[in-house]
Length: 306
Image 1: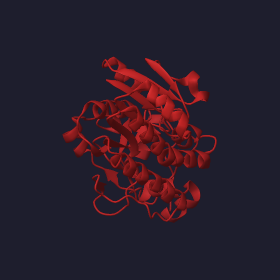
Image 2 (image 1 turned 135 degrees about the horizontal axis):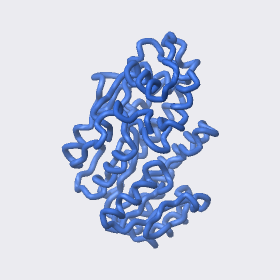
Image 3 (image 1 turned 90 degrees about the vertical axis):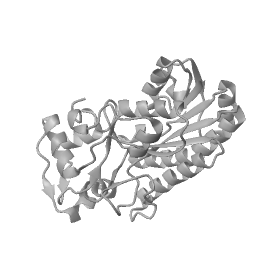
């Protein structure tokens, strides 16, 4: 198939281009002008800014893809400017998705696979939630509410575009180039003793290795199924388990405990929520309908070791 990967320089997009080519697909890599030097080897490089609708339409139409994979984000900015990273990512999820859908229609693409996140659900109900759980669009933190609102809008657009729409809600990514890599931001915070364990650490995390995210995207490209899918490992775990394990793997000091009430001030609302009240995500639907399963079923084997 002719496939276009938008966001081809990203943590998932870069290895995805190679994985699709290994399976015999003809792959175009869509990159921004300033990111050409970070582009993966592809059958074709397509240069356009997703927020420039006219330029994107022209570039995608020239590539003539049958399937488009939307892996666009601006999280590369996180270490230097977190507010800008989240704001730009929200724009890509809303405006960039709309532009990509318009370009997909003009190019005659039939299928659109888009990345989302598996940790945007409201913290209610069972400890581990399926895809039907409501998103946390009314979160008390304005920043997180805006992020989740952008996620909800991306998913609405993809599923309502008149294409074969697939939304892959990735768990918290670990592995090369992620925040949970040994050189990543989360690891550095643990090494510096700056990521404490609030309260009982009851917030549940569903992790996903980058290689499994790539595998799920390949499966979604080649499958017939449509809809929303949690793409996570098989081992959702509370912070009380994974954070001390992460510290041990890094040979870092054991995380100190702090009262849960102090966590938002010390860590920011989002991380406090993740460590104290977030719920996990079940992957049964992706297993059943996409024929995918994680090659790394538990974070315990590799978190903090790569």
